[in-house]
Amino acid sequence: MTDSDAVEILADVHRGVGRILVNRPKALNALTTDMVVALDQVLAEWERTPLTAVVLASTSAKAFCAGGDIRTIREHSLAGDAEAAERFFASEYRLNARIAEYPVPFVSLIDGLCMGGGLGLSVHGSFRVVTERAVLAMPETGIGFFPDVGASYFLPRLPGAIGMYLGLTGSRLDAADALYTGLGTHFVPADGLDAVGDALADAPGQPVDVVLNRLAGRSPVGESRLAAVRGDLDRAFGAPTLGEIDARLRRLGTAWATTALAALESASPQSLEITHALLARGRQRTLRECLDAELALTRTTIRTPDFLDGVRAALVDKDRTPVWQRAALAGRTRSSS
Image (cartoon, rainbow, N blue to C red; front, side):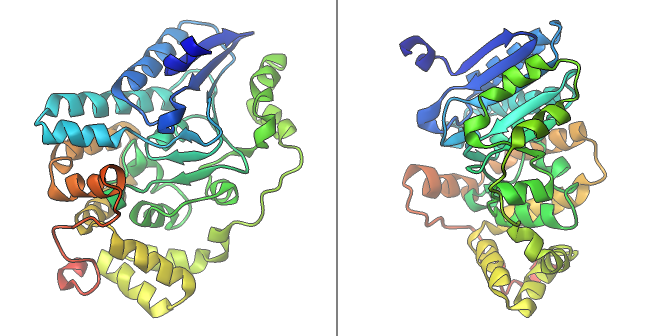
């Protein structure tokens, strides 16, 4: 296994099914520029290969992909290496667009953590299989960044105001929530994931949906927590401004609203404003327009004090005490302007 352990992207074609494994388990499969480029090259080559489907999975039970290697992006920014940062984001977004437009069904097997860039690898594809261990989130506002990898396209298209809620608060979803929101399309138990590729190869003429449903078996997934608070969620996060979202949550006064408020108050105010505006506009943009807008925003955002200290607090010193440049959302009269 020594050789394969050193290779971060493992790929082969087996009986007409392209299989890709993300293989950086010690870093929870955090994406580097080299990994993104390698993935993109494999998929580009396979576009000229007769396939029935592509399956993307992980060698780790802990994480499908915990996101982009944002710590390295911070290092590029501190070093003034704008070109390296640009290369990462441009390569990543090009990969996101390729997955969205892929000519055969693209099936992601989400087991463990799937955050940020992990959603970029999966949500744009045709099918997103979640296991009982799946945890999905877009937690960028907590590190002074914003939901990217096409999130300004896919979050506004989730039911009601769920996308705005997830983008602003970074709330984590379990398998039941993922299926409820549509970020997940099918459930397969973790111990059944290895069978997916063979099942697709065994039934090349059948719809992928039918094959995946047959593998679901007994589902331990319970009720979605988001479904239980959906009315309050839509009312609060469907508000037209950040200030009004804050006010509606305070009026609700429920345990869920209190938790949501705490998430907003701990996030970067700059990131909240960027995210709210980005998601509001994203509903009327194409995916490629959203990715272009996000790429433009990365150029300025990664140089801001909020990003530099947010990543420091979360991933470098890990003290979880970022110092934001402006006061928290609560009490800021300009927040509702």
